[in-house]
Structure formats: structure tokens, C-alpha cells
Length: 365
Image 1 (cartoon, rainbow, N blue to C red):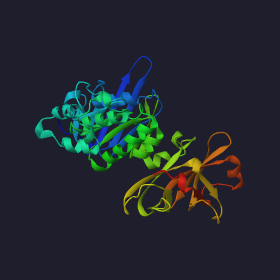
Image 2: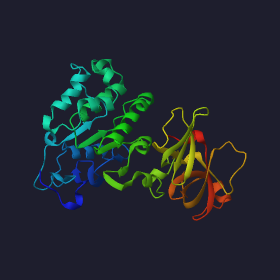
Image 3: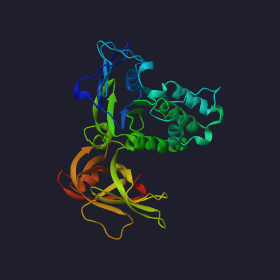
Image 4: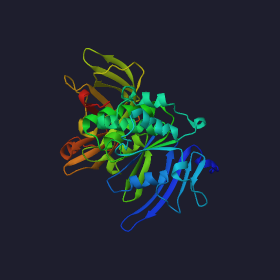
């Protein structure tokens, strides 16, 4: 494969245009060469088509794909899917029923010459927590177990790019909660860029480093997930699912009260947690806008554990009778969803000093 221009080295640079009778995909992507990039948007917006184009399953004559310094597609080159070092995880794990779990995972490994194997079979199995399943047949597994096996099989191909097409959408809430920690583990322990398709904002907020917002076959906006979620000019920052991400580190854990203290750039937060994390562990917290209330003075004798000084960065109309308020907490952006009456009573406006109140039980981590 030939080298791409230097400005794309270390990144994933793609442009695809696919015209169909009732739909046109026209996207340009500039994605980091590490971490998780999420393609997010409503059903039918072109997320899966984009993923298939990245895999080479959709032929786009005028498209290009530069993968971290290598050309996978341009005007003169088209690397077919079977020659692209990538793993693909579908909505439902398509396992071979005649093989046990070990056979399914080894099938992925055998696709790669021994010299090109960078992810040992044992590592893929351990990362997905499936050593105890290796002798089982697929039809005896739960939905969450099947999906974990499917991801392990994709990893066993030692991919340079891992594509995940709504891997949790076919699972119920319990099975989804079972798989999510394993995806976080892959993110933390493997240096393999992932492109993750989802229409579930909670998944994106929990997993993604970079977010591409799509609608009607186009890219509406693209950037750091933390910043994208709190941009008042985007639909992500409005409605009942609006939330913000806070990155921090564990400062302390109170086992008696099941409370964990997390320090971040804007101070510290207390959240309920039955799991004791080690001091210094990195954590990602999610704060939903509907769980943040505002006051002009810090309150006393209150059950609310987290009261943070903040500056109003912006105020926009939300749903009827409600306003969305962007807050700057020492450089960290969070959101508060308040009633129109409250916004008027407090005279909320950019630059105003306020205090954000967040229940400990409302901080998601």
C-alpha cells in the first residue's frame, strides 16, 4: 500500500459519496487514529452505510480512505475488504453454530498470517472475559455472551481498525450493562482505533472520545465528545437526554456510605458507588442536564452533596417552558435544564455567577 500525504499520517481521513434512489450519502471524515470515534444520529441517517464504506463493502468510485498513512482507497487504489486489516462487529454476533466458542475465535485468528498477529488469542479471550465459555456452543450462550465472543473473534484478526455497528442494540438493558464494561476495557488497554455506530446517546457519552453527528447522509458536526455534547447550537445539548461528561480521578472511597469522591479540573464530585475504585484511577462521569439545579447562593442544610461554583456560558430555549443553560465550572462545561420561569426569576444570562447543585445519586459513573 502506498503512503498517504503527511497531513493524514496518524489519522483516518475519508470521503464517501453514495447516491441511491431515495438517499444520498455525502460525508467527509477526519478521525483520530486512536480511541473510539462514534458515528451518532437518527436511524436512516447513513451511519451504517458509512461504516460499510470504511470496510470496503460499499464501493464509492469518487471516494478516498487514508488509514494512518496508508491508502486504502483513492482514484487509483481500492483495497478489497478481505485485504483490509480490520475487524467488523455487527448488531448481532453471526457465530458459526457448528463450532464451539474456541473454534469461532480461532477462525478470526486464522485469517491472519502468523507474522501479522499482534493480538494473541489469549489476550482477546481475557479482555472479553470469556475463558469459561471456550468449550460452549453458540446456541447455549446469552445475547451478551454471544456479542462478547463476536468482539473477541474480531480482535483475534489483529485489526488496525475495529468497526462496531450498533453492537448493543439487540441486547436488553441487563445484557447491555454486561457488555459495556468490556468495551471500556478494550478502549483502555488496546491501541486499536474504533469506529462505533450508535443512536443511543448514553453509549456514546460513556465510550466515545470523538463524536461525529450525522443527519440525512451528511456530517452536521464533528469533534471532541465532551465539547460536542454541551454545544447549545447542536441538538445533542437539548431534550431529556442532554448530558455532559466530566473526566476525573478517584480521590477517595467511603465503603460504609458507598460514596466515591472524584477530583476533576473544576473541583470534586461525590457519587454513590458500590464498587471501590483505587485512588488515582481515571473515571468518566456523566451528568444529565435534568439533574442539575441552580441557585444564586450556596445552600446550607441540604441533602445535595455536590454544590459547584459556576459561570453561565449560554442560555437557549429547550422544549416548551424550559431553558438549557451551559455552565463553565473552572473550564469544564456542564448543562442544566431549568424551567423558563426559573431562568427568568434568577435572571440567568451569560457571565452570571451561580452554583450548580447535583445529587450524588444522579452522577453516573
